[in-house]
Image (cartoon, rainbow, N blue to C red; front, side, top):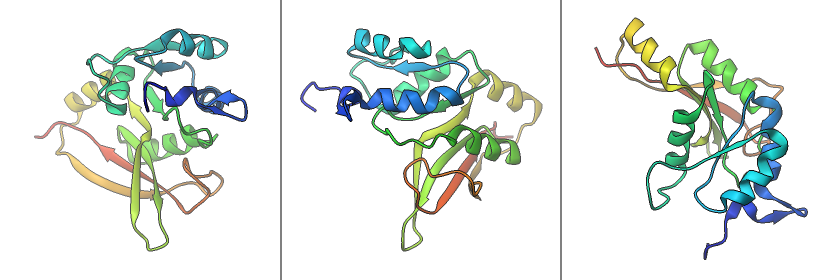
Length: 179
């Protein structure tokens, strides 16, 4: 984007990332912001929410997965709820809907997905609730199983999609050690 940070792009007079923070903050006990540039700007933006800015462990800004990995390393909570900085309309009930999927299936990750008009599913794994690394390690030791593929579970009817008000589903993935 020519050196311009997309999270700082304005929408309705406020940075996109601020809109996301306002929607995620009520769903989270603590907030981390993954940023590799414009650290001071993100620090100021997150200050009202008590957000701490963290950076990727890898150089060259390898993308959102590196930010998610950094958040999982830095988190002091059992779960990490993630959303991209350029999603100002992230669902205000995303965390609760994803937690319901995690609890219902006793899995380590649940993420948003949409179904298009032809019935094709498109995963949106940046909108996700992931178990903290320590929780996954303890489950692997206690319950060794093979890696199970994605399964689909319908989102609760009261909540909206992370992306839009289209048909909603959540996918979950169980990550455990291969036996």
